[in-house]
Image (cartoon, rainbow, N blue to C red; front, side, top):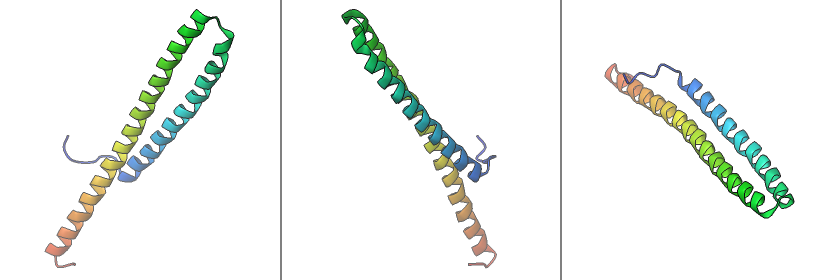
Length: 102
């Protein structure tokens, strides 16, 4: 990586917000689906209920993992954008001091 941000920080912040929204929607929709499946479990026999409950646990774990992945990715977008803005601000102040502007 060259150290140059080729995407404006504002766009990185917008992407982060969109990723957070996607993560929230994924979590909410999957939790509703998981709840619906859980409600149906009582209608099955013992073996089928056990197998479906195990599968539901896997789905819930996958949802947590996907949500965490998206949230982490969004947080990284925000962190990177903030880092570049801070660096740009520091460099602007340093240049200002060099040319005589406080």
